Image (cartoon, rainbow, N blue to C red; front, side, top):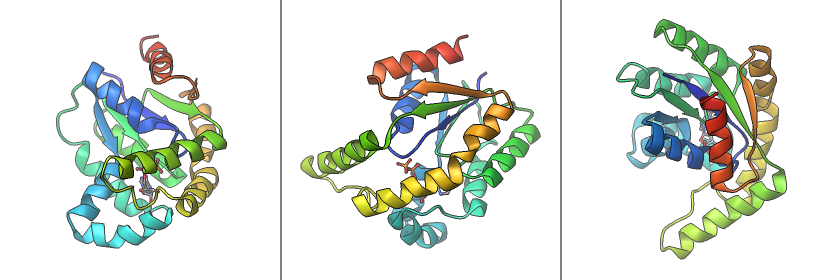
Length: 193
Ligand code: ADP
């Protein structure tokens, strides 16, 4: 069983790649962003606390996201976990290491999807426009202002994890600018090595 972390800024393609790994390898996607949006949509206490922070583009507290992840690590582990959008801070990374140890699990790879900022803006603005064109609504944080804050949060709080996992010998960089399939194949190369 392989457990991986997908690292990369908003719009890098973490969710897309995680979805394909779930389909093809029976892995379990743990996206804290999805969990928080679910909490918000179903109006739970946590959902009420996080709604404004998320819409603004800031990070919610470590305590909340660590709590969400802790719950999910107990059950069936199937083909292994994909951590998508978690950890996002050094404190979360330390906590994840401890939680995995408690479960007698190891983290195998931290896969960094490498992209540039221009493509991120295009992808996210495009994703919002597509959602609206399809008759739905865009994510509350898929707008230029929140995106700026999300990118800043990434560089300030999350990008140090690249060094953190490099130091642990777990970091694998993948070119996130290729087609969906090209990125998928590069990730497969890491997983099947
Ligand atoms: P993206 O990668 O496109 O920014 P996500 O769906 O991963 O989107 O996250 C959306 C928002 O949810 C973040 O901007 C943040 O407010 C919150 N969030 C998600 N995961 C975390 C986390 N691990 N720590 C703190 N906040 C988080």
